[in-house]
Amino acid sequence: MLSLEQVCYRYDGEFMGFLTCVFESYVHKEPPAAFLTFGDPSATLWPEREVETDEPRAMRVYKALGEKGGALLRHRLERAFLTCLPDRELILYGLIRRVFDGEGKRVVSDLSDPAMARVTLALQKLFTEEDHLRGFVRFSEVDGMLVGEIEPKNRVLPLIGPHFAARFNGEKIALYDCTHKEAFFYEGLQWRILPVEEFRIGAPGEEERAWRGLWRRFYKTIAIEGRENPKCQATHMPKRYRHVMTEFMEDEISDPLPAKLP
Image 1: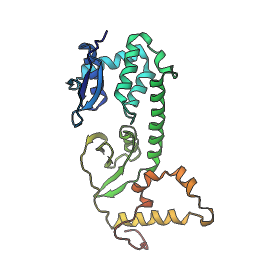
Image 2: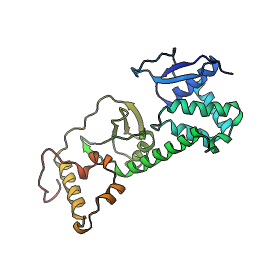
Image 3: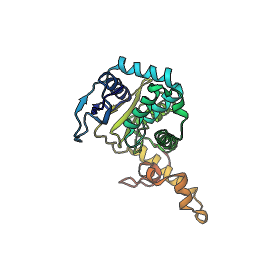
Image 4: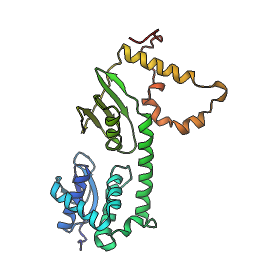
């Protein structure tokens, strides 16, 4: 049984850190009132407890979730942590507590529960955004590296990064998420996601500008003027992705289309 004394947990913002907070809440019998990251300047009237990620303790919670709630529920909770669902940690904590309080595998199928329904909707939006960005991410070659930028609502880098690493095997890749201030780096069959406060893509070289010009020319050429349908186009290519898509970008120096690529 948990006590009535609530606390605000501060942690590193990662899933293993969150599971460590779950472990600590049961050890100290303190239900969480809120979750904040170490760098979050937000103040709270609740007493705070700073929790450093403890891998063994987090794995105990992770394994227990699989045993009591099932692999499907554990997978959904792990993916739900990547969403932009408001009060995400509190909602996931509530579901985890239900699992450990005896409901077990029934939790994942209880769509009549408002919390599970919100998680399911958030997951649908996460997977839709992941699917869109697999097709809408554009890379530019800068100093021998494929560099791109995205501005997603959800934290999709852990999902789409490995996809591009497999697709461009052997290349060097840097993909920056300017919403969550982190970047995916891939080189030599190894990848990692690191926090990056500021990220600037270098100016495109002559060959890169030539490729961009060809891509924009292709995009405009295949359009049929009499059949333009902006609403339909916005459905298949949402406007919120376009500012980082090559075919909608204009270089500071607009080069004429070259006779041939360098």
